[in-house]
Image (tube, rainbow, N blue to C red; front, top):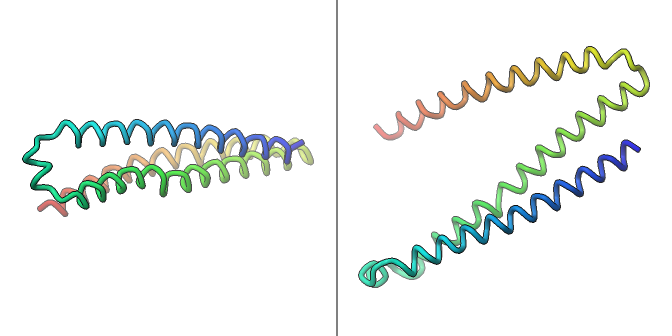
Length: 130
């Protein structure tokens, strides 16, 4: 049952991600095309076509490239943790208390890490500007 549940979660995650990635690509494509077609003739004359095409492909690649890999990794890790915890709880139910405690501590530590990471990134970006 646990393996079937994991397969179901992976299938749902893949279907959801593919559907939303296509929707995001359509929105980006429409915005890019609108911005190019509504620009002035002078800009179109001065800007090389290769630069416009390269910029459009870079923007679409940002959605199609690392985003699916990161999403798949998050789903994989989350599902793996839940499945392992369920397997341990099925064998020895007393481990639900330490398992939930470790999950709570991990969530709090992850929240603190993300807040600290944001301020550090801001500082690094500020240093690069000046």
